[in-house]
Length: 135
Image (cartoon, rainbow, N blue to C red; front, side):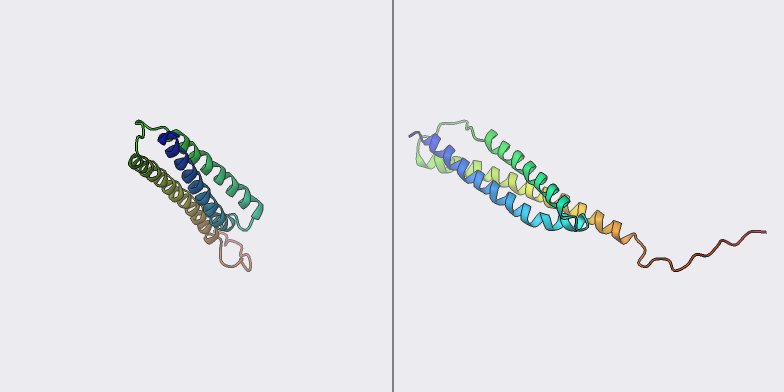
């Protein structure tokens, strides 16, 4: 079997595995933020969470597919490791940037919700006072 094909198969298995692992981690932990932001609306939190995960998969797996092809033919085992380290390193960096982007967006949404909740008066007004007329 051609060593280039071996490198491609290893690259795809590891990249897809990492993408699934990061997406599940984001989904599991991001749902808590979304539930807080959406004031406990569990159905909406689940829907938004699912949409974020689908977008994460599309972007990352699209990148993995586009980055699959290589410039050079792999002729020995050393070149397999070199090609894999470069490709997987870039994939890990992209996953990290996507993860940080998701965390940043979720945190911004959460902060906005906290700010909206803090703008409400701490207690309801007890009574109403009519304005004094001017003479």
